Length: 288
Image 1 (cartoon, rainbow, N blue to C red):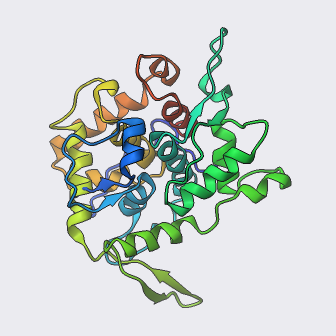
Image 2 (image 1 turned 180 degrees about the vertical axis):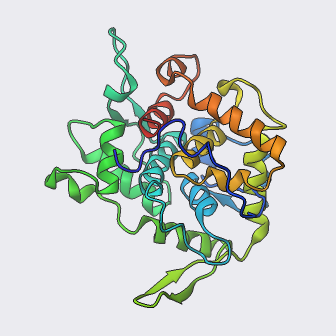
């Protein structure tokens, strides 16, 4: 699938551009948190709470310029993967049962578990599509449909349009970014430069800590939301932005540990007790 990143790509060459350090909490109301038990241990209710999609986009946005790299063709599908995992963490969707023959993650369908609106427009639009689609589709298919990367003209109606712009507006509403217009010779473009540096610093710091000071050497002992963020930030080619400020030694350790996560057998991980199977299905689809 176009946009998906290989397990090893994006981990070889270190960019030297200075990037600000960072963190932020994720969105989801109390009902969502009770449904899936994904409350951060170090949660601070005063912090700006962001969804996985907003966090990945924030990592990708250039602080002053307010737009993602023109060369990044991975973030589109990465954001759709974020939507699927966010819906799963909020208890709205899940994978169908594996069955007696233990079908692989890639062959199992996405099932609507709870159609109660989340309050997030993008999530609710995607949830509505999944609820109304019969027979159900696989994670891989939904990433393609929501991205508009499908050859089936009947599925084009599932495409979520202007996702980056809509997420950027969410960041503006939460006081993280602002809105400006920039002229690029042949066209004008709306940009969203950073206004609240603290939120992004906390986000980056939390990503760094997850593979350095808080590393558990066991994916199942990591917070699911952070684990998902690491995988999807890598698939979206923005994880490097979180590690660029590290010292050379810490950078090497962080990259080594991310490679360990990328080398896991995702089907095996999904069979462990208490796991989120849809999360692993998305990670598997995005890591091909």
